[in-house]
Length: 455
Image 1 (cartoon, helix red, strand yellow):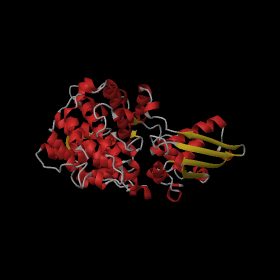
Image 2: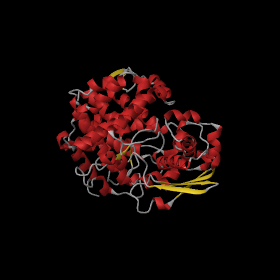
Image 3: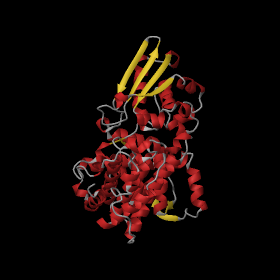
Image 4: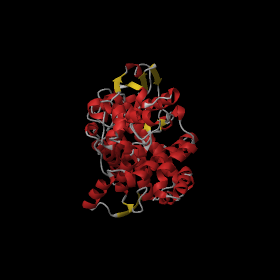
């Protein structure tokens, strides 16, 4: 171990806007816009939102504050805004993914950055710098945890490593010292929590625990700002993150090429609102359907080969074949694959086909198996092999990566269109103005002037 906690804290303290490469700042803005589209739509449509709002009301946590919840006309206190934006932005499962760490960086980081940015009157440049700091911290810690081992232990890295990323973003905006950020990371280590048990029954835990990570990061940084003494060596210590949350720690990955190689540029975006492990197969199914003019009645059998992480999350036939909840559908290779093969597309509104007899019948033709070829010699675990058997024979495709990864990252116009498709039903004519504000965030002397357009 090499003092990873202190090294990351020093990085956060010393990061300056002018030192961040232009392409990294541009990517951070696009990723932020992408996340906010999901948050805005989920405010009115995610089925878990009313329960969270009722909880806040029951506990008198719904008081008016100064921080924006996107898609909501009311302003909230900073910690609660971070909770809500984190949970909302992760609810559609349409938010970004960092492949190496298998986590969703924007969900904990962006809500923390905006909540504290509005709280302290930060500029757009300040908030962008904090977002990059948060991305770098949580992605690197996700790498160090090793996602396969972390998943095997039953943990959700967006909620565990994400708490540290949120604390980094909040701490940066508070202007904390290195020792204070070490303390904030120390508190984060006590708060980092996220269980994969939600997979069993399509529960809403996944959304809430990511929102909690954003809120907990804000709380950790605020405690440190007020001279709270947090534990040291929170990452590498005897009872630290890497000791308690993984059986295959790689502490060197937490700090490798820090400040030189930007993990932010390795974050991919989703073309479909479902678990990232389903996407390469969906890409292949849509392409093969078009290429071979396939109809469901021609299909005799479909075999999907996935990395073992994908099997853990989406491939259990006993619980995943015929999902009836949106979360169940988001984590079902059977449902998402059958939907893609049936109609040649897949978007958020297609969850209205949960329980559709035609989709269930097509899903019965699917088998999902572990394919070791998707591990050997591959950097990312998100690939898929698809074999479709018809009367004409067997058609097979292997996709090493899904679309939307850095090598196939959509252009700005496509990303803005995805945002507008999600946000227009909520923001109406203001959607375009808000998108423009986020894409020019560095021009705002106070970030609140931009965020108010997203209410």
